Structure formats: C-alpha cells, structure tokens
Amino acid sequence: MSTDESAETDLLLDEQACFALYSASRAVTDVYRPLLAELGLTYPQYLVLLVLWESGPRTVRDVGTALSLDYGTVSPLLKRLEGAGLVERRRDPRDERTVTVHLTEAGHDMRTRVTHVPRTIGCALGLDDRARHELIVLLRTLTASTLAFRGVDGTSTAS
Image 1 (cartoon, rainbow, N blue to C red):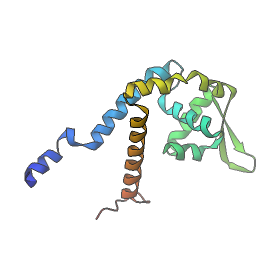
Image 2 (image 1 turned 120 degrees about the vertical axis):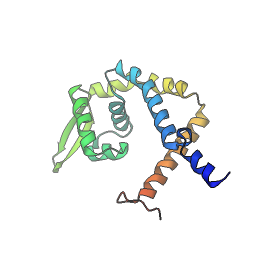
Image 3 (image 1 turned 60 degrees about the vertical axis):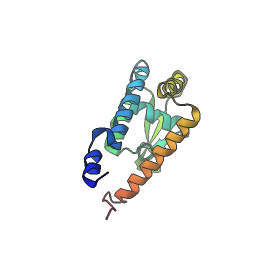
Image 4 (image 1 turned 120 degrees about the horizontal axis):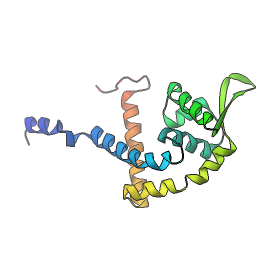
C-alpha cells in the first residue's frame, strides 16, 4: 500500500479507534440508562455508589480521583445523591476543608437493588468472563498509555 493510500485509509471513520471507543461507550451506557432510571439513578451516580460500596467513606477528592472526575463534576453528583437520601457529606472535624462522603442506610440498601445490573450488562456485552477481563485489561492499558503520552502536566510527550 502506498503512503497516499495509507493516509486515505487512516482518515476513514471506521479506522478511528476514538470513534470505536466513543460508539461502544455510548452503546453500553444506553443499556445502563433504563436499568438505573427505574432505581432513580444516573450512570455517573451509580459509579459514585460503586466507589463507596467498595471502600466505604471517602473524601470528595478520593471519589473524584477514583472516577477520574474533577471537583466541579463530582460535587453536583454528590449533591443529587445527597438530595435522594443515598449519601451524606460530612466535614472532617480535624480539618474543616476536607469533606467525607458516607453512604446512608438507603445508600447501603440500594446495593441490593442493583445486583441485577452487572449481570444484565454482561449479557449485553456478549463477552464471557475471560473476554470481559481481557477487554478491561486492554482498556486500562490504553488509558495508562494515553495519560503517559499527555504527560503529567497535560502536554504531549510526543516528539
């Protein structure tokens, strides 16, 4: 294949990894939407709850870090979850600047109401456990590579 042909192929939509990832992400999120809507949750709210179910009370900063979200995105999510009675934000008495997020009893109870979600998503993905695990490893590798490529300060390290 000539360089000109390669350049043309490189610019086809079907050859764009970013578009394939974007399309897959939207498709999977669209499966989550009705499952979570019947529980009064959005997908990002579900992710916050997963973090708290896994590790208990966390600072707002830790929740954001776990989800790769900034404070300006996490704070409204927590406010809505708090309004729904699922979480409670508390100031750390040792450091008033630090806010810790705690599950309420209703937040703990929600965990039993969402146990069907991972199984349903697993069926929608059409992957067995091994293939699903391989996909997760591949996506984590991709994430780490792109973060390294951007560099710590967000600038490209490419030459």
